[in-house]
Amino acid sequence: MTAVSPPPPWVLPAPGRGQYDRRQSREARIVEQRARLLSATAFACSREASPTIASVVKIAGVSRNTFYEYFDDLAHARTAAAQRAQQQLARRLHAAEERTRTPVERLRALMLAWTAWATAAPADAALCLQGAPAGLGLAARELEAALVRSTATLRASGVQAPEQEGLRVTVLAAGAEVLARRLLALGARTSDGTPPRLEVERAERSLADAAVRLLR
Image (cartoon, rainbow, N blue to C red):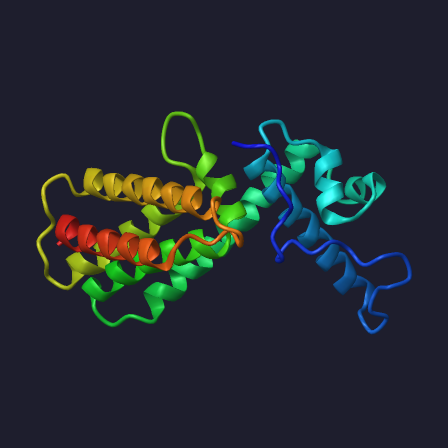
């Protein structure tokens, strides 16, 4: 990881004192403030070798007291940010499953949803992809679960399972994790944090083809 750089446009700092939208309810402001702190935490943890609460509140544009209204410490905020990112990925994967008609379409849709998530929310993806040292990260485990559901549907349609199907699912999830890391690294070199569209398309095609070849 490199030293922290200016946050992208989607990490918006909090409005100054007295500049909040007075039409918002207190509950809506609380939700917005917490979401801002989670985004700032994800960004700081994805870019700094040793992130601190000071860097998080600077990115979010709030005070330390505001941070402690929501989180006990940086570890608490980091866990919450990773959980939010995992939930958002899960919603994308479920949506991909629901909008497809055939098992093969579902496998391709899952791979496309994975790369779309990694490129649309690079800080969240980087936070989840840090994962555990011995195994898949949070995000890849979410994808693995979606692939298990998809292969169950495939078998229910009468397609014979390949040898060592469970291992193939894990290998595919691990490969998706590696490609997502590559996209994040490419995006970090651009001004807006977005990897080149050609590279995204290559990753999508590679993952979709690998899913169909490995799991049919």
